[in-house]
Image (cartoon, rainbow, N blue to C red; front, side):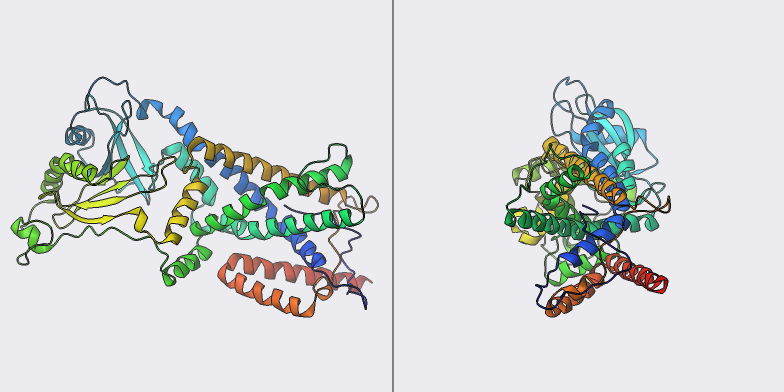
Length: 480
């Protein structure tokens, strides 16, 4: 939400609460909402448009790449090892690192290769028909969700506008301010509604007054729609910060300090067990016999079907990704992948030589904060509830775009009708902080400093707003 309904603003005047008048936080919230809305809303607008595209990308991906993802069912699947070897014939120059067996009949198997020519978090996937063990094509996939090229392109557009690390500043700035603008706008709209009810005049809080005309209707739409989506915007802001560069590092440090981090699976095999061929953690002694990386990987490929059987017997039986170790001291890791309407993701480590389970990581044993983080990220990405999740995010993005556009329309309509052709809408009255309770004002400053330290881009931009505001106020006083 940006640029709220503002009464009698003036850039150069300043006022304090008259003696005996009740102090209120509304002028401060109005001034903050106004400046943040005007100056930061362009970044939020871009994030909303690109985020809306990303929300529906998983569904579009199924259509665009259907020739890679789906095949005609023609019988029982071949052993996964045979499917991997067929993919290796396509890319003998690369090392296989993982496999995602076809989860359903008619789906393809993804054989994943490490490719040094690709970017960070990217792998090459060869898609194989499981019934015939025949490759059907290859594509670059990205991240833990194994996103295909179109979704990856949209994801990077949303994340950094394809500008690399410098481009992440735009998304972090938008994410840092989104919750401030949303909550500030929600307070202003509720306060406006409360005052209207106190005067016994008609007022609407969550519905749009279609009888209103002109700017009044714009204000009503801006406030009512903004109130509906405020919770969703705060959620997107909170989860989006986990991906940000500067605030994200502080979030990671906080999670570590509070033991809220996601636990990891131990894939290390006991050296003695590897050397003697014993099971699990038994025995200690000599190192494993030397062997070429290629020979080790080929041996592990032959063990993949038995490893997957062990995983299924231990309850890791949804759609999975199984890593293929590159050395003899590492166990296979079989982890359930993110799937719609699946709220948990278990993983298991298996010694491919002995078939013994060396470690298990059950989602039920995760800290509650780690669970909430995982669910929040999946919900933000549109993966937790499938198509329903994606449509809800797309609707939220469209609503946010309309709120921002109407905020700018309100600002433009407040411009002076006389004077310069370049005149724009006037900001709220100065001296908003002095109109609040002194104790509250001190608390606001303290909270602003703390939040600004935790979210550096929010703090620096807020400082920039204050400098600009002070310069404009000085200029107005000099003119007067």
